[in-house]
Amino acid sequence: MSDRNTTVAVIGLGGIGGVAAASLGHAGRLEVVACGRRPLDRMKLERPEGEVEVSMRTLTDPEDATPVDWVLLVTKAQDTPSAAPWLAKLCGPETRVAVMQNGIDHAARVAPFIGAATAVPTIVYYNGERIAPDHVRIRHIGDADMLAPDTDDGRAFSALFDDVPITVGLSADFTTLAWRKLMINLVVNPITALTRLRQAVLQHPDILDLTRTILDEAVAVARADGAVLEPDEAARMAALIKAFPRDAGSSMYFDVLADRPLESRQLTGALVDIGARHGVPTPVNTTLLALTNAVSDANG
Image (tube, rainbow, N blue to C red):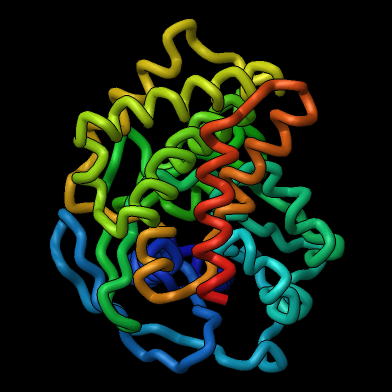
């Protein structure tokens, strides 16, 4: 059944946002507009189901935007304030804003910018890579490509992808799952960024030891913050990370190669801050935060 009158705006056309915009656009069921700095009329999407080329409608000036049913906010977490002009024009009282960003506390992060709109936190698992401004690639990782809360808003977000080869799972314990995703990012992002190597580096014996130490600290903080985790959570997460595609990158890996600022403060910084609040020491993650912040500040 066509849902063509449902309007979806995608802010951020990097790997994750480009994949989402192209996938929804290719389905042809929704009215999709991409919001970015440069005009783009087509997007090539590489996916296991086959490569497709999708026509894109893009806006480059927030003044040309009008309220939509859904906003997919797919900027880096640290770039949320820079999306404020877009959010001001795209959001109305009935708008839902799917926060497709790394980190935790998604709703609190966007609340100052969306007025009466509703924030819908999401967890993105698929690996999206931007090959060129008009060319993206998706790798599926795990059983679900994304997760959302098992609420009316979360189910509505899942319905956007009903006929799209991107799966959206639902969970009643979104807090725990958000912490689990953060733990993945605490390992994969800093290590790939600091080494300037793709995820094959995670197989190195010394890096495997470092991974477990990062996760031990993260599990202690997550439990103190209310996450319900397994007794062997760190070992489970380490095994999951070890199984990731060796040729995959990470958001911070691509940012460091492009001399862009890193989202270290929103990822490792969040863990360190919450650990300090609960009195849980995080010496290794604090060291990684200092190193990645130095790289980020140098990139400006």
